[in-house]
Image (cartoon, rainbow, N blue to C red; front, side, top):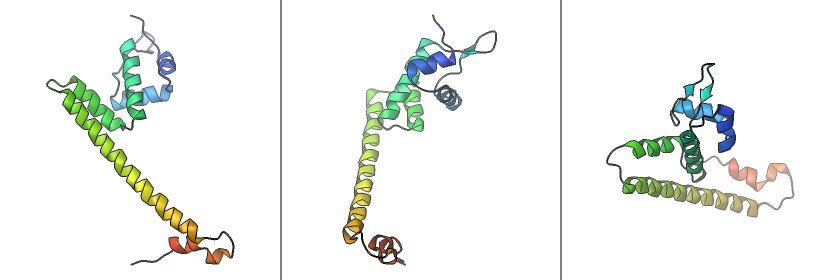
Length: 135
């Protein structure tokens, strides 16, 4: 089995050395064995684990979510339905974020429509809207 040093692991997975250390600190990857001189030595399995983490991040899972997924993978009795549930929950979170962003976009759009882009700064409808004192 070919062991990798931290730089090689980082290069193969497209992350930084600091990211590898961070994942190790967070328990997302196992603490590696050490060489006689104290250097970390990672297995090819760690490459797979880091790639899994990166792909999960790309689809919106947080590091906490990823830790839960990894734990479920090792837990006896876990089914595909358990993992599907996590994916469904993530979609619901994404949908809520989309609704929130649309609300923000609409509010900004209304403010911009009210502004001609000319006139004194003291009469800017965008700033007036942001300064509204509603109690």
